[in-house]
Length: 121
Image (tube, helix red, strand yellow):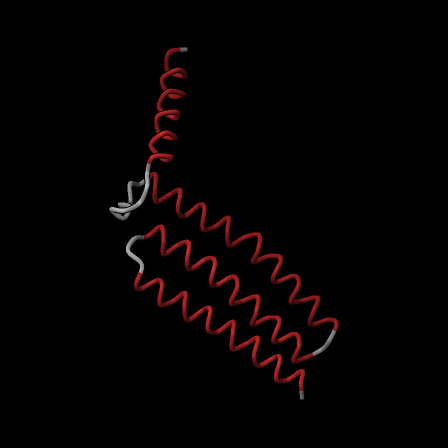
């Protein structure tokens, strides 16, 4: 019975993180913040839900499958979020007015200098 209660709590907590993520997708001001919030909260939500499922079934093979799924999600989700955000920067998707862009401007200047040097050679 304790295992079932813990399993339900993990699944509930994971569902709450996903709910918070979906609210963030609606409420946050720009694409980049939405992308970050959705990636982080969904990964944590999936982790908690899968742990709850693993506790419910209490089987070694289920835990192995859950570990494989989590490994895949932890490797792919941040990479996919980075690629999507980078594509948004390249295609000039607007930032929120209060976003600090000093570091990005420095990166663009360095990139332009490298492009100029390659063109001269």
